[in-house]
Image (cartoon, rainbow, N blue to C red; front, side):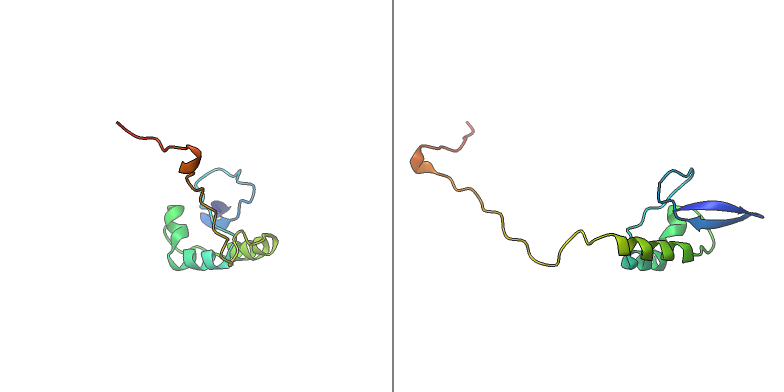
Length: 99
């Protein structure tokens, strides 16, 4: 997201999906919870160094649209533990030692 001049001295929050627009930007996960947290903490104003209110309607629509496209990147199931290799001292393997 970046702030864009819309004329008459007004600025608006714009979603820059291609990440090519000039100026300061703010990055946000395409997740409704992240958007709610950013709005509650007033993170956009700090990230973009802007004082005053920022309308987030455009961002909310973009997050909703992008969240529908993106599959969850993490599952809620516990992964199987990775087996730890055992030391085979009987086969002649010796760990490194410091002297």
